[in-house]
Length: 446
Image (tube, rainbow, N blue to C red; front, side, top):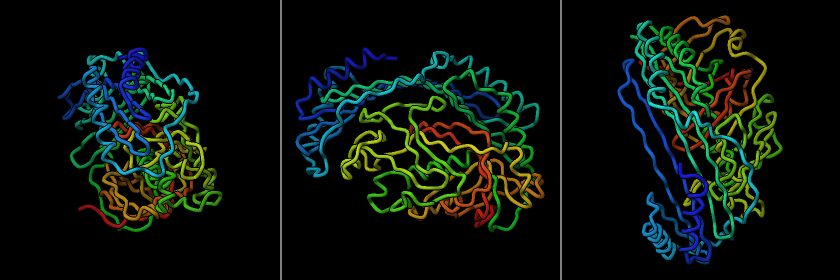
């Protein structure tokens, strides 16, 4: 770790060197270690440390951004000069008013020293338990175990300085039988919380159940969407629905719907970057404190997430949901959660006369963003439910359905929730499982 003192020193160097009207610097330092395994054996163990410095300069209404992972004084000067040169080539942004001014941010404890110091031997020990259980049951284990330490800081020439350190561990596995597969995953700030025995049982059970799959006719079914499948719903809601920019550009289902019913009465969704049970980040990439935003409450559309640009267009305050500049995507809900229900997941299928159990989706793509019409496939554990019991493995389905329609037909929500972390976007999601009526499958794999 660089530490707050060193990061503040680097940020101050950038601000002192820049001659722009306004300057912003984002510093992200990451130490990540990975143990990957396949065929029930570890085959890769790597570690990476990196620091990214991103500089945004403002000259009037012209803006330029440049980034580097070299923080030597000479490199900092080059990065600032590159950003300046880019700004001079830009058209003026008539909507730009100013970088944010300082606001107090919350201190959220998210750093677990045990995770930061987790060794390759410790990761191998956890993976070894899983691989041994796989061999005992005649299946092959594959997957990855990652531990990450990160520091994020934002500073600007108006006096903003925000710093946050954190850790998380992520474990995922796919178990492969002769004709089927099963998936399990776990994410936590504390790597010691990962229980290899529990993950092994879950994935092995699905892999063994998935043998000898049959095909059933596509059509509309009641489906039990496990947490990993619900994660996909939340991701698309964040990308396509809950951004103020998407509403301003008339491409969100939330347009004109605030205060109206948009989902089932039992669905409540919020975004909270300070939630201690997630992977928190208490400020956004402009240094603005993240607010808890209720997006949908008991099925009623309640709010959107804003960054400075989208807030200024409407004369509002940013909710602390900006992404790093340059950003064409707009504000992004990075810490979404769905309220749990009161039904244990193991009891959710008891009311299903005939339906489908879905472990997760993959290769999902938006067909009609405004309608949240999504296409994709099921994966790693798809099963037939008959008279409240799981009876048969199914061949994977292709589906094309509206996630918004699915969230308007939620019969039950599980009591349990599960945390997921996306290494690519940095987003974390806390999701329950859902029992949904009328989910449309359009095809079956060979």
